[in-house]
Image (cartoon, rainbow, N blue to C red; front, side, top):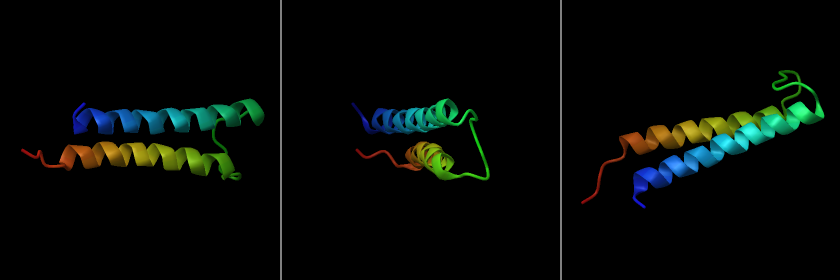
Length: 65
């Protein structure tokens, strides 16, 4: 598997992790995103931004011969 698909797979993993964290909060608290209690939301947002950063970084990476 080349580096592009590795980066996409890793980004998808972090998107799924962020979604599962939000889903856990929805089942336990009853709301997807709550600004006054950033316990679960901090980890979910960090996971989403890490996935976006991986995708942006992989698009700017040079191809090695």
